[in-house]
Image (cartoon, rainbow, N blue to C red; front, side):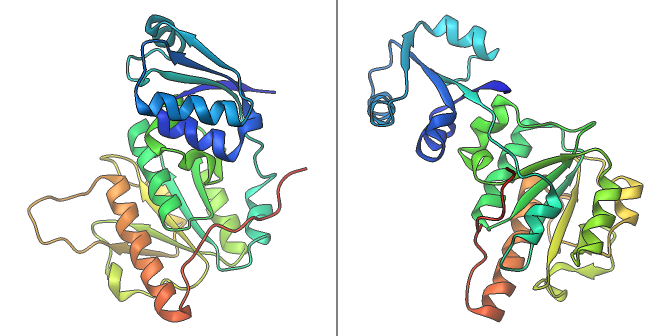
Length: 259
């Protein structure tokens, strides 16, 4: 079974609360005596998780960075849903997916996971190649959302979008030159938002696989937004329309899991 390191108080606390059995041990900077360290120590004791005090240099070697906040966990990768199709078929409400085409910055992916968690996205989809995966930095920035939002790295993104269409999901991409404005389109059907990479936007085949392209209205001098900001705006409008139509907010249900 695959293992990895995650670091940062939010990421590790979230994993402890939701999946304590997936943590092999936690390494904590012996010099940290503050409240966050005490709270984490108490939670580890409560969940019978092994906690090891060590020097900060060891944490830096384990993570390859100095930005670990003094805490690192050796964890087992969480069991993934068998397929994206299984997840969609197990939903009891209209699907809401977030698709990122070639996002390479782990901070942007982590922020997108946080946004996805906040607005009840059922899964986040990325291509396997030329895109960042669930690294330790992504876990830290996501502040626990990497453990709550199902994550799929697919071999062929354009083909996956076509398969989602066959499942009845409307594919909406964002583009500055799109003819339709965000708040003028209906977003209450089963939906997958597709956002492009930093700077380059969606690739041609990804764009051609979309059913509809929309633009985010902007009044200032800035021509484009950070991908996580764009995701937040699009998902907020989707959530607003869903609430207006049904009187309830989208939440992440528990679909079928892989056995």
